[in-house]
Length: 232
Length: 232
DNA sequence: GCGAATTAGTAACAAGACGTCACTAATGTC
DNA sequence: GACATTAGTGACGTCTTGTTACTAATTCGC
Image (cartoon, rainbow over all chains, first blue to last red; front, side, top):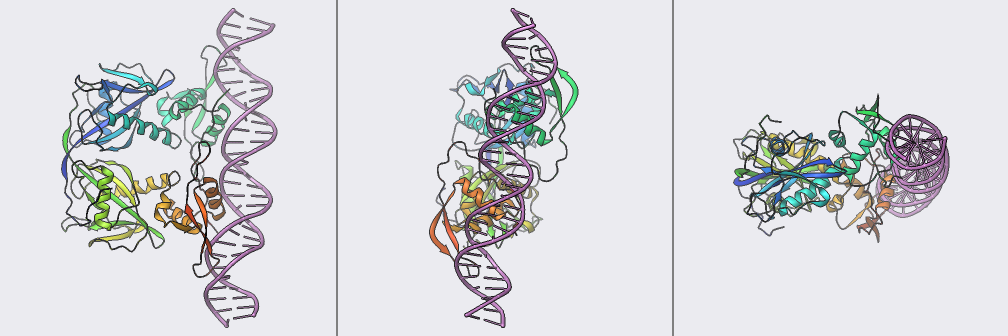
């Protein structure tokens, strides 16, 4: 809080430099990975989040979609704001204010733009300080919302096994879930429906395929709540 | 989503006009009220949220604190970002981008600045469209966070009765809670401790006063979760 | 004074959610 | 055919939650 005599002044806009910084997340090889781009030589960090200023008249999410396409070569499945950042932490383009946006995209082999690469969230290279803060907030936001909104389904093809789905939840939440509890909670949530198809993945019993089909839920429904750890 | 060939461009900041728009909320006479300021004549709406551009180098929350002081005459008890808004909806200062921030302040008779007034959230006058959207998001954000962070205690004096506290939760959540469940959940949360003092409010049995005293909670604690409706 | 009204606080119960274990089922591998 | 591997489920004990119904301490009306 800053000390300042409380007297009214006419508010007025001032010119500011604004950036949209995007945390593109995708499941890659059993971890959650973020898409980083190589920075121009000269900065201390070699990598940063993809970012740009919004075009005149362009919405923030639209800008984030454009920026994601520019680095990923594909449209993200879901965009969500994670906050505005105006602290003094260094931004690669020296923007006064950054709007952080998290984008989710399914795993795909689609060609990345030259200079873009996936990094496991657990092993990110050094980032400009503001970008580091945005990544941290993005993972927090994702973990908070995964129970409330069908984020996980955006990362899967239209038909998937319950083990696939559980794997996505575990990536997004960052912890293991118990199989029986997961399925029971999923039942109660009325979010999926079984199909007639089964998939055999080599070894083990074939798994039934499900599709995302949220049904009307009576009363005020609570989200899917999963708790525990360690499946045997 | 906008259609645009995905080829890489050097990102660059551009000048934008930025506003910080503040939703100051306070309990007033059994409802949640927002603080509005009279707008300069000429605009279609007579009222708007207090707002201003951040000063050079000023953090967003710092700006929100300053703006709140300018309209309320006091420092808010808590500030929380609710999002960035860059759609085409009209802003009273024609800012390209607004950062919405919600401020909570206890009920107080403190003198408002001339031109500022409290309005029950249930009966707001017409607002500039972007401000209307910010108010709606602010109430959503407050309801989502009231379980996770001690918002409610910021709206009460250091000592309060459990009925006072329940009333604040009901205002913030916008629904009635069941007395026994509320108290049991509060017990489990280890957020308050009883004092030796009691308060008699006229009729009825005197109530014990409590103070906010979050104790270390073993393991990963879940927030206070209240569910039900209708107290008899 | 004394009962009715009013607000505070709690015990206890029933129903449900949750964590866990142990099992059955269907496939591939050796 | 034995075994490893993954899928899927039934059942049980415990903890959580919604609800009812009660006790407690005060003011108000008469």
